[in-house]
Length: 51
Image (tube, rainbow, N blue to C red):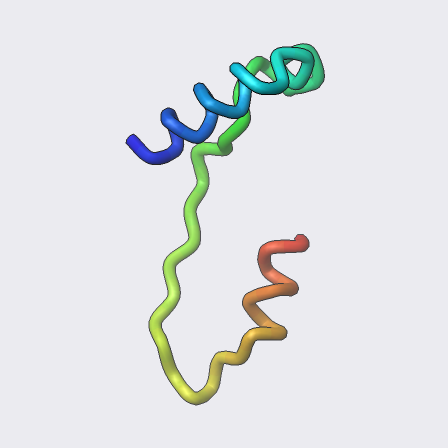
């Protein structure tokens, strides 16, 4: 629900973005799940998001 609200508000303010989207979708169907632990750090999460 949060994703749909974000997209709706974003497209209201910037309708030209829709033309730049591949297939008309802002979000991908994938997801990321991770647990909090001492072995994970902010750098590894940041690299995952970038890639």
